[in-house]
Image 1: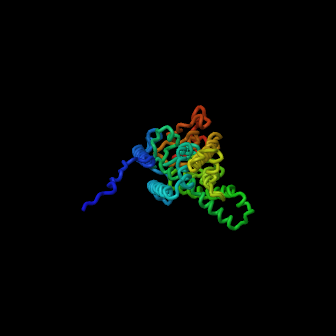
Image 2: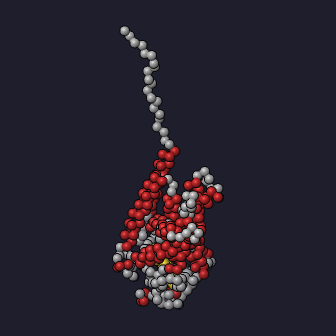
Image 3: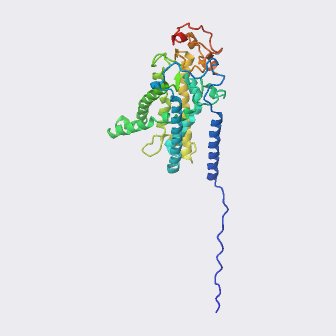
Length: 377
């Protein structure tokens, strides 16, 4: 007896050819860009001053003053800490993005990292001079050469500093609101209240952090306004009133823009919708708003310090000059007038940008005092 097949034999399943998805391609593109960036940084990094700012009369890296606790190796310790912290932040950011998507905290962390493109200008404006032993970009590069000495890589860790005060600020706001009625000021004006709290926490955090870092020798302020500054005239002088107040110009908008209202929307998201910025992609619109506003306020910070240069009111110089292997950064002649021997460096922005059309003025050595003279150190 024979049986007949009543149905067609099953055909083998179609095998779809492997295709690259757009997201997969972009992942490889970003990975390649990341590797290229690391290679570029490693290839161009250096931890010594080049001829433009180097003092040819000095060999080695002598220091005419004692760093914090007398410890001579703060520079490598701080650089290793920054590297570990940045890697940790990147890992946390990737994990957070995969778990929560473009969370406002992640977006603001990106923004407060991106704004370091302005850092050479923000070092030039307040006379912030970094230790040439820090790993840094080549001083001959046009934009980074704005910095008085070097533009170091440690600035990539600034996200912890610029965005950090938001978290104790919003925590304190929630605690205060929990103890107050809904008709009180902190409920009716939460953004203003948050701004005040970020200012308080930001001022304190900046003061502690900067005073500590300056005492380690990481950097210094070569010139400050005597009024409102502490340790005036020493290598660790710090413009407390001016720096710790003005730096909150970045901290406050960074915190306010990620604040969520009762509807769960952030301030940056609402501003993006109002301005019709990427209305179909709210996260991207929110990011663009953050990027623009924080960058603008960072520029305002720099302009405030630049005005001190234009008016020549930052007259107190840090003596002795703490980095002898580098030329004395003296674009206005105040170091020379206080007895500091050269050679001097004026930087690439000592004419019209400093309200000195003809460049560094001609001054007389020790015409004001001799407190920076070598025989006084």
